Length: 442
Ligand code: HSE
Image (cartoon, rainbow, N blue to C red; front, side, top):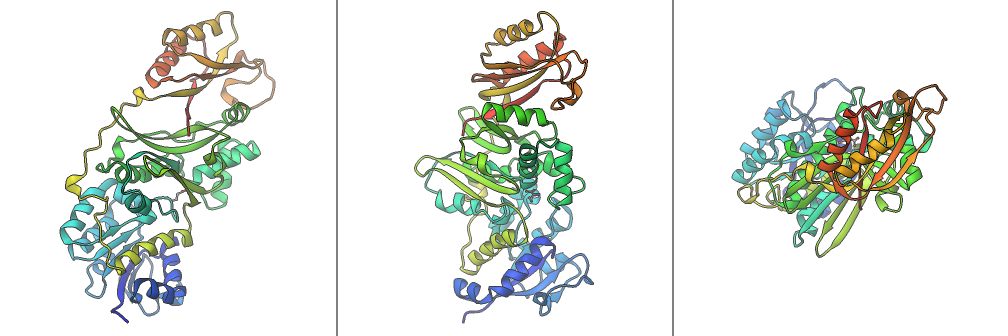
């Protein structure tokens, strides 16, 4: 048997413990696939005293992950600590500089520092693999790097955050408010006690930043992504979507357009006829539109101990087999700058929910403002004025004087619809800020 590949694993939380379990239970399978044993020789975690499985018994304990990262006894440093800076970054940098291969699941670190870390990896002739950083078990990085390497990828989109998908699914299934669905997600352990990172769309944006770079051969540019979360989605929006034949999903979408890359994370109206509308709960999916292969839709577990560990292990196997590629497919020097397309230039149809003042001429004023901007309406639904604007979705009759109105536009530009809505607001014909959601053709 060939010389073992030795690992230093830093971070023994959900993913780290899953990886140790996988390596212990599949040792023979891994050795067979790699042509050499894969052995964990060092581990590091925040607390040593926590009870751990037998998998760590033979490994040396390192209180400092940076010391583990540079230890002569390891070939590969596996970073499962998390965080976009601090000790995770210090340890990964130290490992790369010491000529160690690195495998990480840390999307935040790569979205922020991916290019400088990739340069370090290239300079030192080592791998920096991150399959587990995007959509857990789904092999989307390998698909972009390998399977679609001979294609022009035109668009990548998907459900990249399980927490948001769970919340939106529960709002749809049980007619829950956002707050009630979030509370349920927290009770089930899907959402953090501070859920901002997930529900604000930032976690999905980190993943989209990596996918965008891999799909279009550009530098990672997290700051160029337009991000909207799901906090403003109400039960009224979910109900209106269903009545119109749609559901609402938080999508990450990156499209190569003539004026640059349009990359955004936003709640989206998705047709009930589309395959993506059937991806419910914490499940993730990624769709890749390419010229020769057509559209591929990959669906699977986007998080969790075993699912994410499976992707980490596949990256380790590549290294064990001697496969070392540039982290972002091409060498950093040949990655193009990310040229952002203005969101105002986005073309598509829109859903608009208004609380229209119940007074003569209000609707006429609204449709005139739309017409002034050349925004054509596909449908208008006005309900009896019994839903208070502050609690749209609540069906309790009140004496309130605003009527809910749902508009669906034909294809227009984002600039035009936003200008029309700003004019409608300043005319005083609506009782609260309009809700605007993009409709995605998938
Ligand atoms: N918190 C993420 C999610 C998983 O809910 O999908 C890790 O990125």
